[in-house]
Length: 149
Image (tube, helix red, strand yellow):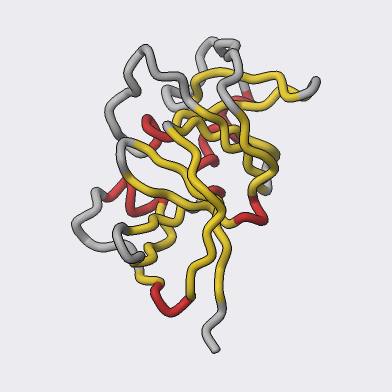
């Protein structure tokens, strides 16, 4: 019997991403951002999450994608990392998805190098690919640089 893995999914620029469900604290609609002077380009600001200040990282910028249209507000996927909680700004929230482990593959060579470093691998689904985000690697710039400023 093949083990199933469970992922919380979201979309960025038409691509389908997932993070391990155990890493997700919560999923939220848009929250107002407070800018952070001298923050890295990928950190859009800070959000107030029930009294706790959380860095909000724009995954489009982290993955070298074009910026979101000004009239489109991002959604928040709040993840737990070894260095604390970070909100990932995404275009659209998907579902929780169970996938069979035997469909997992390493990232293809045709993905640009920066993106490939942030992707653990892919799952081939019936109609699309599910790219599995390495949340530790993707958020490392937010959890180290913002806390040191």
